[in-house]
Amino acid sequence: MGEVLKFEDALGERDYGLIISEEGKLKGIWIPEGQDDEEIPDAVVEICKMFFGIDPNEDNETVH
Image (cartoon, rainbow, N blue to C red; front, side, top):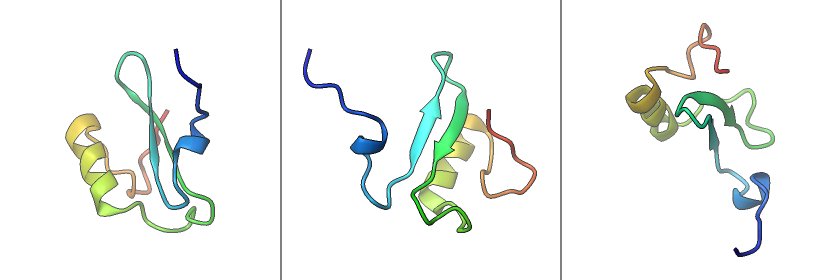
């Protein structure tokens, strides 16, 4: 097996990461440093809606 890369090391400065359980459920979204108060980009929101049925920009959404 090749070199093991840490999750945050695999992401660029402005990349978002989806954390998915082995059952295929969305557990969390890694948000780039300094972007905590910004809305999650539309492309990421569309993926979350399509595959997980949630809009992470809605205030009432909690991802576990």
